[in-house]
Image (tube, rainbow, N blue to C red; front, side):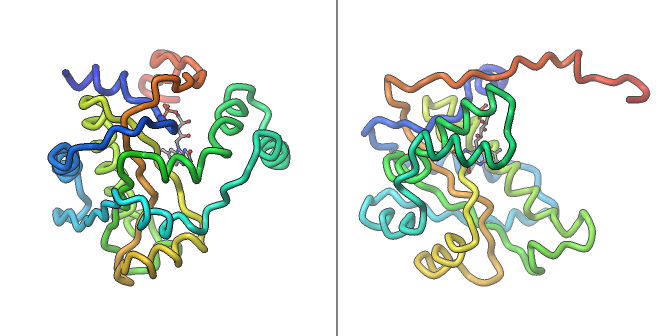
Length: 208
Ligand SMILES: Cc1cc2nc3c(=O)[nH]c(=O)nc-3n(C[C@H](O)[C@H](O)[C@H](O)COP(=O)(O)O)c2cc1C
């Protein structure tokens, strides 16, 4: 598969089948992640891979597990979200946050070295490590797609971050940007409608 095919194939998936992901494939896609550009030439990234369901239950313990579609609508109404396709995505996604992390073939916690407080940057460079790990995550998502494996990233809330740090023994000078759940898609996975964006409509030559 060439790079364009993998890019157009990748989509967020939150419903998985039971099929296990071979550890050799996990190693291959993390290795692809490790080829991503890095701010300081060091690629100070570590990956906690949680396949075992019992350990995973402990990890996702702080995530709300009973949000309904109706609750989701109320949440996004409160946010003032009006775009129809965006609303559809959130109404589909919010109730699945717990289940998707539990049922994915594997859950990865990508960690990156962060010496200064991540949420108190004083300039853009202070966010370089955070930016770099997302380059790494995109490499993982694209190579996973080329292997027929799809997934989703979830941004943790503060109480989840504290919990994971404790349960997974993440050192104080490492942060994690998201949970990364990967697996083989369920055969009934719903296609979420997307806005079609044409590159030519977003391109500005010489000035905006
Ligand atoms: C930075 C970032 C944060 C995201 N956070 C979440 C999340 O917390 N939960 C979730 O289910 N999906 C999350 N997503 C997935 C997006 O909802 C998804 O990428 C978007 O709807 C576009 O769909 P696509 O990935 O299928 O193209 C996140 C994606 C990104 C890039």
